[in-house]
Image (cartoon, rainbow, N blue to C red; front, side, top):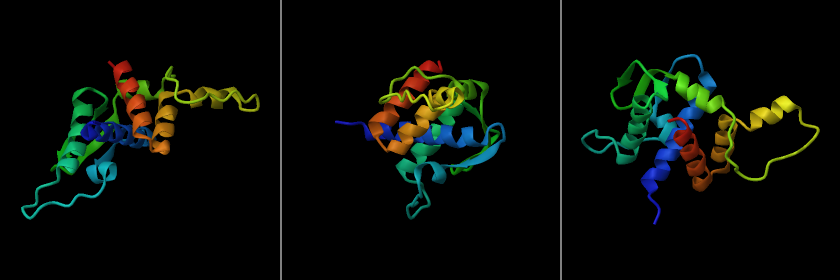
Length: 147
């Protein structure tokens, strides 16, 4: 039996990393809705468990020094979010994770080949695949190497 909440956590981490890497080194507002989808609050205005888990993932990444932020905007966003040094170095480093067959095309420039071996490129490929298994493997590998 799969722990769906853990798969959601890994997917949220991947999306957060991708979004913050895209805007690095600028600070940005990171909305939970952009990470885990629209929320349908209940009759009392309380967020769904899924939405709160997405928000919790943002806070967790901050507590473990992968990102920094100035403040929370209720439970809907984190303000002035940016990758920390640890997060940036992790994502821009070369990956040793084998995720599918590696291309050995001699026509590809060395700089492109090197970038394709980075953690951020691996993460992009995993998210693009849509495979929960690939995303889990990739994010788990990156978090375990970011310690």
